[in-house]
Image (cartoon, rainbow, N blue to C red):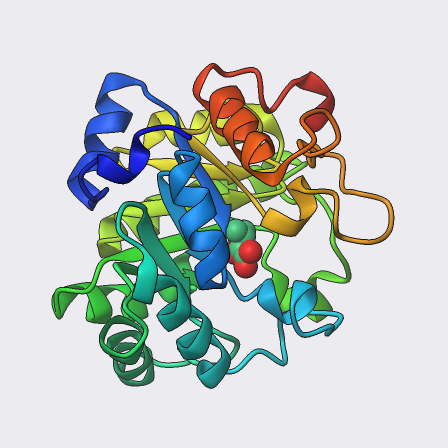
Length: 270
Ligand code: KIV
């Protein structure tokens, strides 16, 4: 066990300081109290209470059926025992279709779910919702690239931003979100070179999943990095349990690999 539990809470200022110092941010998804304690003891900086729970906990094929009630329940489970890591909670499908609705649901995730920050999917088209939430003192994390809530429109789980026009649109999305007040940005399944370019163009920290080593931090779905998720893993996933043998050691190895830059390796990148 590390002495992480004795460390002060991670705040947005901590993450900004890590970005300035070049210390990589190690993040995993988390949905319950047992894993909250284990992941904090292993040194995780940021929890994403992700709507991926629709797949890994509830057995749905996509994140689309996930509800506000689901997110509030799981976020509160994490917040009840969490003492160290920063908690980013996903806004579920259709919970932010206009700025008023977005603000009302973000406020519930903060008040009832114990979120430190809310995350929503989309770029420029989400700027008004982001502005409204942020103007009421709630920190927002953007999410661009592969947007699981729009999977039907995207036509499947594919790498985004491969051609020049799509890459330029993603850079524009990232800039719009930052301008609207987003304080953190998740980039999912985009080429490593593009993620590096976007990270360099922004002042806010970026966290990648399938976006290469050039981001300020990394996140994986917990069940993927423990090798629990059935089927062929995505290119960017590494099973850390396989080489370590215990869940605690696997998470510690993940944190170490993110911090020393050895994960993601070239074979995990697009
Ligand atoms: O729901 C989720 O797991 C996510 C990941 C990108 C972290 O949003």
